[in-house]
Length: 193
Image (cartoon, rainbow, N blue to C red):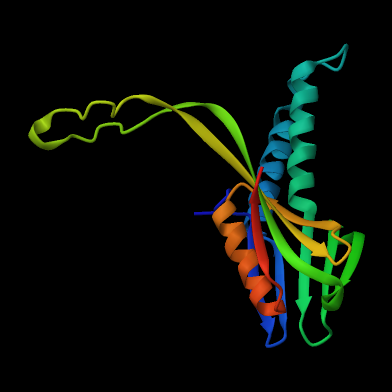
């Protein structure tokens, strides 16, 4: 099964190098979705009226473009301990869009910022039974659902945060941040907004 929630992978390239990037499985999943949508458009395209504005066609084309963009977007963070550098490059279909490099001596810490959003209610418990077959009081009460977004930053000596990645799997992002901090020798800090 392909994890859509955890979209980042970290691997040790060599003894002195780590590489964090968007999971190729996730990119492949969105590329496959785009190809299926495109094939559906080409096969069933003869039935589409070309006069006037067709909202369904515009939405369908937008889904294809977004799926292709997600499949083509890649962020690669390379941590090189030998050179003392963290290089972040963002690419679209292999074409480098941006490249930033951070030297270890210029960095103060790694920050993981957890943003908690309110997202409706969820039912607690479900079908768990207490002793004697009775439902525990309060087991089916509604509680607020917490939605979380984690953002990984590098903090420089000038206290300027440099954004690296974000994920809805905050625990996974925390373990990635700890691995990078241990590899670089930088402290890691967490804050909640």
